[in-house]
Length: 181
Image (tube, rainbow, N blue to C red; front, top):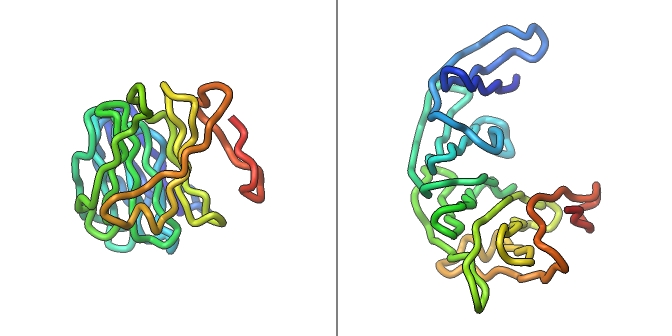
């Protein structure tokens, strides 16, 4: 099975991957961004819209379970591989929001700033072998790594990695030892 996001009428379809037939079609928020993200067991799919809405859909029961607004202009979300948290990266406000993956309830917020300025979040990914989130910043030449353990605490503390230039987006080497941006 896989999900197809339909841009024109703000819907998504769950498709049978072998037959390419629609199993279920459902409405979504407008302007989904960053692609659907799946829970590690494949049962739940999470969506983020540009206007800050995060949604959780149950594939087994074919229904939308929860929605919460976590920003004004959201860039992306990532789901921890332990299935406990969802990290939401926002252009506006300049922050990261940690949600409980079960019911999308608010856990905490992390303002994105250096000593001199704040920054929009340009990318949020999960690095499973590292048990952490990796965050690229749009206005500060840093990459942040936030271990799942820290994201699950009341006051997450990012590991700040200085970069020579701003890294807007990135991908990992296959072993997750190198970040390429």
